[in-house]
Length: 132
Image (cartoon, rainbow, N blue to C red; front, side, top):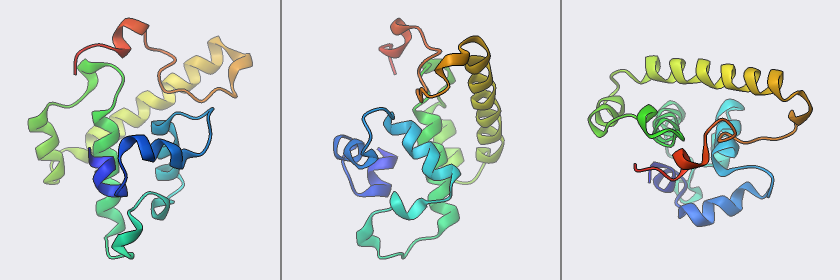
């Protein structure tokens, strides 16, 4: 929902913005965040009247809420605290370290699949459809 608020797009429409069938929506968002290309995500109707750091923090919270394993997602009380500015930096740093570890692990165990961009490659199918 946060990504919908930031972009002014429904999630279904937002997926089309990624414009690449081989890239998952969340991986596309992660890439734009990493490259500091927030203007490609933010609703054009805002006409640039937003604070980059605040948008970046909202995207970070949204990505933390979309982790593939339900137990890794923050509780709503934690989301509220992060939106108020408490604990986001620590949680984001921890999550980024895990992301780097997963990428290195996947590359080490599947060296010929470095071209695949998929944030769910390490999650068993039964966890992908688990409760939220």
